[in-house]
Structure formats: structure tokens, C-alpha cells
Image (cartoon, rainbow, N blue to C red; front, side, top):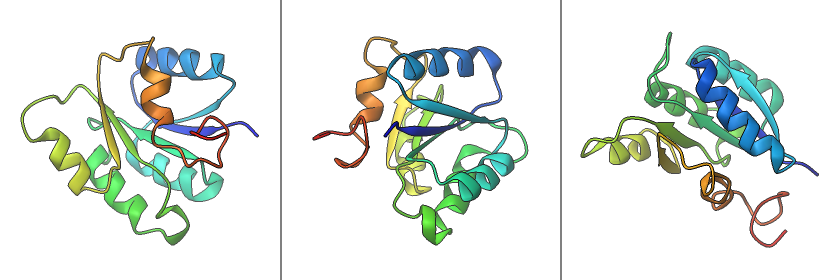
Length: 130
């Protein structure tokens, strides 16, 4: 079973890089371009992990994470903010909004997959213990 990732990102270059890195690991990456589209796609597809940017059109990543957490079938899915917001308090704000993790941009292609994998459940492909 492959890991299904929903990446909520409006920047084409950022999406390309993350898709390239995760696809090389055999994961399937689906894209949403804004927070509202991300919520709709997550509810429909139930990914294994959700990676929202924080600075998104329509609905920012904080509000997106809060709305995702309200959906029962998504309540246990890891949400890892992938963002250039790196000021004091930004990590805490993301966690308070419902994110389970936080990765700063620019991402490091050598460590990114491991950073994401830490949040997958042991039973999912790519998670620890699989």
C-alpha cells in the first residue's frame, strides 16, 4: 500500500518539489490549491497525511486545519504544516489550530521524507514499523 498525501499548496514550484521528493519514495501526492479545496478533497479522498501551507488563498492553513479537525473521519489524520512562517510562536499557532507537526520552508530534500514519515502511523506504508 502506498502512502496517500494531500498537499495543499498554491505555489507551483513548491508543489513540484514536494511531489518530486515524495513520489520518488513511491508515495501518491494529490494537490489542492487553496484551503477550501483541500478540505473538500480530504473529505472525499481520506489521505494518509495532509500537508497544508499556511499562507493560502481563500482560507489560510490555520483555518483549514481547524476545519479538517471538525470532520470525524479526518480527526486522526496527521496534518503537518509546511510553511515559510518561521517566527517565534508560529509553530505553536499551527499546533493550536490542529496541526500535528510543523516543517519550515525551504524544505531540505534530503530529510523531508523522514520528517513527514515520523507522523505516519506504524501501519501505513512509509510509517515507522512498516
